Image (cartoon, rainbow, N blue to C red; front, side, top):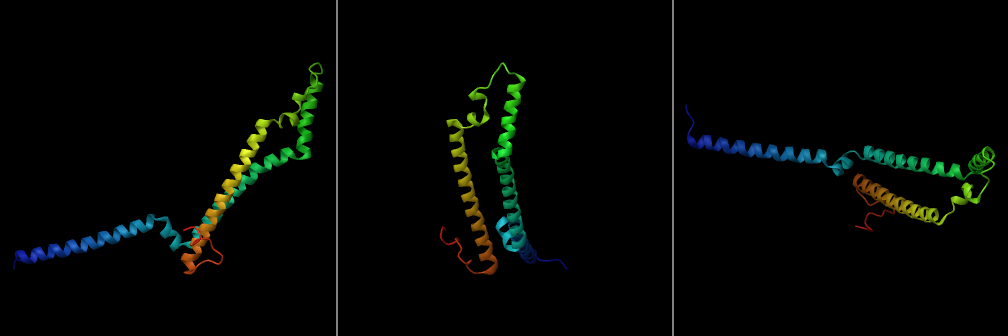
Amino acid sequence: MGKTAAEVQREIEELRRDTDQVLVELELRARNALDWRSQVRRHPAIAAGAGIALVGGLALAGYASYGRIRVRKKPVGVARRQLGVAEEVFAEPKKGLTWRSLPAMTERSDENLLKRVLYAALTAGVVALATFMARRAVDTIWSKTMQERPPGGVIDKFV
């Protein structure tokens, strides 16, 4: 019992529709699997943990770099630098002690002051941007998981 041409044609059309539906669903799943926003919606706790870890790592790196500067400015650090200068002077007494050989005097040049001001401005800008981005991320996670606006949130103020 052979199939007629119309039956074969109908089966081919059904297979095409089924294949199209499967491809559309597969594309949607692939898109959702690679979309970071949908991953945050699906796994808000993991996303929050990753965000906290990222912010903590950046804070730790900033603290470590700031710690070196802080140690240098402590009286012990200043004394060590001045002791190094004194050792150099006593090692070569003929060279003598000049104002330029003192580290405290050379650190206060105008170029260093300008660099410090630029560094402080850049740091303040980065901290403000990171704070805004973190607050925005927390507000978005809150609104997606709780299905309500966050208390005191900034999400609607800048959108």
